[in-house]
Length: 453
Image 1 (tube, rainbow, N blue to C red):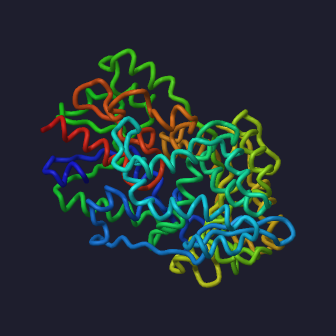
Image 2: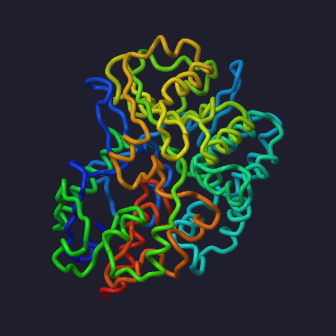
């Protein structure tokens, strides 16, 4: 879209039968019960350089918000939750309210400026260096260290749940980065859903592209640049190793080695549930939360993330659960509501995590199993088969190790270039990483436009 808006003739080639990647939706558990296939909540999509440049609302895209952005139930009916307001959230955290406000309050007030810097490649002169430095001071910490700012289990677990989105152990440097970014975004923008399912994002994008003169072809699996008609630009929305195979011998050796050695993180195992009457959480705020982190204490989350990182399947995995229908009731069929859940599992996990996911939910919502009307399971292998970028079931297209957070997919001044003139990488393996925010493609297009100029 960014290229087409500048007058470039664009042709999109999609290997799958339908476009969308991680923003597909479908009635997987029954007629009228709409599930998101991967991405469900989009906290960084509302206000970004891409969102400000491209207005998708004219093509039907609208955002809806749950009452509670995310929650974290604990045993015996306890738990904690994040609301849009930092002050309202802090008021529910008791002794941890003030520390929560100290961390997230100043960041939320400045987050619009901060995102302008961290959604770009790290090697640039920041527009807001002082604001970025405050964010960076927290983001650089190991999650296990930053969590010590909170003294109660509800406060520590609330941070642990959002930090676990990084798919990495809490003891490593910069393991707080994703949690600080998403936690601050919840207070600044909320965690909205796309009305009508995440596929509505794709539908709006496609409509705009066609209006700009672009074309889209599905079911076209490109294996080599030689199959193309010598275009001026090639934008590869692929994992780095796949890009290396497509480019072939033209790729400089040093870049080829970096792409082939690029590491992917743990996998995801997904279960979509159709639930009659919703989930009977014992924690009241979880009944109103769009996202629920089903994981137990901070220590349990840390252990589970450490296990999957080392290739071990935890008995009690971290489960991310979406109740998008609370913000968008059109996704339900009467009293039958869609619930999307996935567990963090080791990369390439070949087992069945369905029972472990259900046990975690039942732990905090007794009677949940009795309300299940239907389920649709996607194993790690099925997730990878549906999207070749999800190597080993890793839905974030790359391990979020400290070096990769700063330099992805390789150390370079322009991480979107491949060393082959006119050929660029624009997938979630490039900065700023995974998420339906559009910034990987936007940044790559900006780089490509400079070459055309």
